[in-house]
Image (cartoon, rainbow, N blue to C red; front, side, top):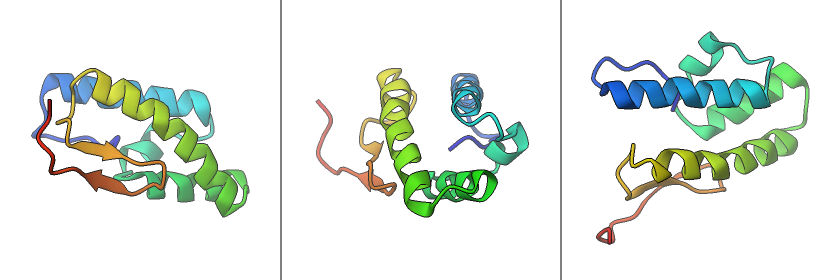
Length: 100
C-alpha cells in the first residue's frame, strides 16, 4: 500500500510517497516507517487503533472514509490497473470485467 518497492516505476514510488504524506496529514502520529510497512487497509486500521486508542470500529470507519479518497487519488491517476480497487469493507476487490 505505502511500502517501498524496488520493482516499481518512479511514478509508482512517487505516488506512494504522496499517499504516505496524505495519511500522515490525516493521522499525524503515524511515522513514515510505520506507513512504509503497511500492505493493506486492515493493517492501517489496526495501527491507528493501537496508536490512538480508538475502538476497532472507529479505526475501521476512519480508514474506510480515507480509502474512498485513496481510490480517487490513486486510480484517478492511472497508477494502478483499473481492475484493482479497494472497497469500503477494507478488502481488496478484483474485478474480472474488461475495463472500458
